[in-house]
Structure formats: C-alpha cells, structure tokens
Image 1 (cartoon, rainbow, N blue to C red):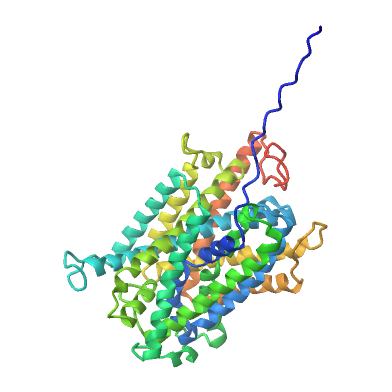
Image 2 (tube, rainbow, N blue to C red; image 1 turned 90 degrees about the vertical axis):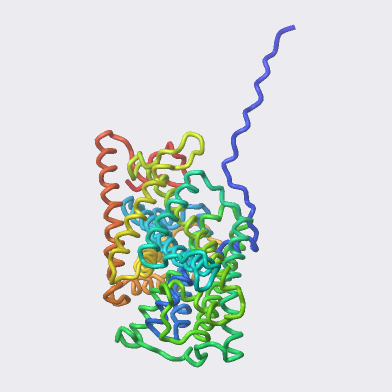
Length: 497
C-alpha cells in the first residue's frame, strides 16, 4: 500500500473586518454625544456678546450649514464605506497627495485645538466647582480655590497631561460607555433648560424672555455681519457629526440607517442648543458678566436660576465629565492620524513609534500634547484674546475649510460610476461649499478673532515643514511616500505621489 500525503489544514486567517455592533439607537447616541460637549459651554456667552438675545439664530444658521455638509458626507460615506473620512474623499476626488495631506493635517489640528478648548472649559468649571465646595463663602470653609487666569492655565495644562497618560495607556472606546457619557452630557444641559424654563414661568430670573428678539451689535458691524460672526462662533458647537463616518465599518446596514440617524442627531443637538439659549436669556440679563469667564455662563444660570436647589454644587463636575470625554476623543483622533501618516511616510517615521507592550503611538501622543501645550500657553499670554474663543474659533476655521473641500469632492465624485445608496441634489454640496468658504473669510470675524488665522497658519506650516522634510528623506532613500489607496494593501505603491 502506498503512502498518501494529506495536505495540512489551511491556516485560518485573522479577521480583517471590524465587528458591526452599532444599530440606529447606538449610532444616534454616538452622534449626539460627539456634537454635544465643550461647544455649548464654550461659545454661548460669546454669541450673546455679539448679537444679544438673538443668540439662538446663529445656532440655527450653523445647523443649516452643517446639515448641507452632512448631505455630502452621507453621499460619500455610502459610496466609500471606509473609516478615513475627509482625507479619503479628497484623495478619491483629486488624487493630489499634497492636498490630501493638508486636509488630513487640518483635521489633526482641529482635534488639537478642540481638545485645547475643552481643557480650558474643564479648568474654568472645575475650579469654580471646587471653590463652591470648599471655599469659606459658599462651601465647607476649608480653603478658597483660586479661579484666576494663572490657575486656569495650570489646570488646563495638567488636564492635557492626564489625557496624554490615558492615551498612552491605550483606550479601547466602548460604544456602551459612550452612551453613559452622552447621557451625562444631556443631563447637564437638561438641568440648565429646566431651570431656565421654570425661572421664566415663575418670573424669578434676572433675565427676560422677551430679550430673545433683542439684537445688540457690540462690534458695530451691522446686523448681517454681526450674525455672520456669531454663526462662525456657533459652528464650533455643531461640529463632531463628521467623526461618525469613522464608525461606518462598525455600523449595521450603514447605507440605510446612516442618513436618517446623522440628520436626526444634528437636529436634536440644534434643538438642545436653542433651548439652552432660551434658558440663559430667561435667567440672566444681557449684560451679565460671569464670575470667572464666558465658559462659566451655564453654571451662572444654575446658581441664579435655582438658588435654593443644591444642584449648583454638582453641576460643575457634570460639565467636567462631559467636556473631558470630548477632549479625550479629540486627542485620540489626532494622535492616531499622526501615527497613520507617519506609517504612510508622509510625516517623519519617528512619529509612528509605538510602546512595546501597550502598542499605543507614544511619539504621536507626545507630539500632539506638546503642540496643545504651546497653543494653550501662547494664547493664554495674549491677554486681549479669550483663550477659549481663539482656540474654538480656530477649530471652526479649520473645519470650515475641510468641509468646503468635502463638498467640492462630493461634486467631483458625482461624475464617477461608484454606486451610492444616498445622493444629495447637486445644489446642496455646491451651496455648502460656498457657505463654508464664506464663513471662513475674514469678514466673518472681528479684529480680535483674526488670531485664528495666525494659529491655523502656524500649525499648518509646521505640518508642511514636516511633510517637506519627510518627502526629501524619502527621495534621498528612494522610498515611496504617499497616501495609499484604501482599496489596496499597505505593500502596494502609494497613490497621488
């Protein structure tokens, strides 16, 4: 009998697809939770300063601009259901490596400026809460907690260090945990809304509900430009929905549920923001000055609107919890994008190093954290500017430019033969691109807000320098460098060189 050979059983390959765990409810909570957070705490006071009691109008206009862009994202995410977002769409539409890099690095910068904004909001509210709990005047009488500019700077920097340590340890984002954080965010804002409406009904607040139709132009820009400036400020509060496209590979039947859920999430966030403005106007007079800074205006609503209810003692900690989650997500995103670009040889390879055990991108984390340090310290030293206003405005500026590119990419990719399960009418991305570019212009900013261009310009210039150095090294070593087509493996040649 002759021996027969038996082929060994084929090895099981490792799964390469993400698990689809998100249904419409979880996706909706993810989108709402991503939009809510630092935005409404950071910008509400500034919007009232610019347009008075009509601060609800810029929220609605920012919602309209965001919704137009959301239509473009929805068409593109159903055409290309991969978690690479704006950079992927830019590469697919134009195939220009440098443009793709600028869009990707602008998204990185927006994450860093957003997290830096959040750190200042956390610092202001945490110090206010600690002072409320332990001061001689209001709390246990143990000690007074400093709440000034220097104290906020120290706490903001310490908070960024904490985020870096968490990031270094490695954070597996859980969708169910995100649900809890979203509920905390919504609870804090619902408290403000309820207090405002109760105060309005009883007539116990210092504000006046009739002020909702009062327009005040503190910068003498005229009605149209004043509302435009306020809309650019409000835009910071409406961003976050674009992050949801990175969850497309973990969503069940995304082609069908994504459009309805994303638009619903934007609508819910806008409604909550408008109700918050109504609550603020009902409780506080238009010329109200918060004790610490503009980012403490919602805490002032709680204090003055419900003085007999002890909720004011825990409210600051609710806001800290909500805003801190937004900042962590921002820094996770920024460090991972830097890591990814380093691995694709469009940034120095040193930024792609990972810890041996945890496998977290430690050099990218240190780089993004140091960049946030420089931002916070430099802007803090510019006394004529609000730190939160400058950084949140820079976030909005960067994303308005990114959104304009996404809208144009949507128009370009309409000419392709890729099947889409959702199609936006041609006029929507066209109008979206025009409005985003309009809101990114200097006419949509006051003189004090022009610092946003300087911050964004310096950050992008740093990215271009790193890109140029990497390009020169790649050329010298005869190595390919460019963004890889997401339909191919990492071993394939990069596209758009």
